[in-house]
Length: 100
Image (cartoon, rainbow, N blue to C red):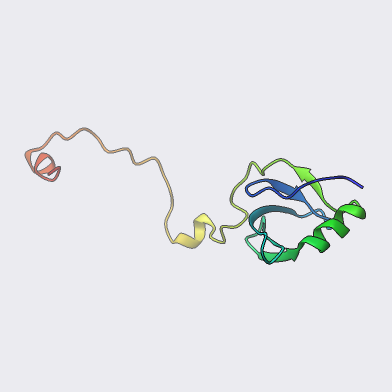
């Protein structure tokens, strides 16, 4: 049995190969709140955590490089295109007056 303690802010990989982060631990209730990469929040008790460890269903994992998993909005859903619209220098009197 692997001994992996749940640590808030750390990422793990579960038995279904899904990434999740421990977001809270309640010692009094003996529960662990986890959030999957897709944003789904779940709770597991200490005994379930230990059973998953016993069955080698939890392993430590690196945080995902792509943090868009929990964000359910695609760029095209925003109704506008994102371009590099760097503003030119404030050259006219009207533009300078808007900086206040």
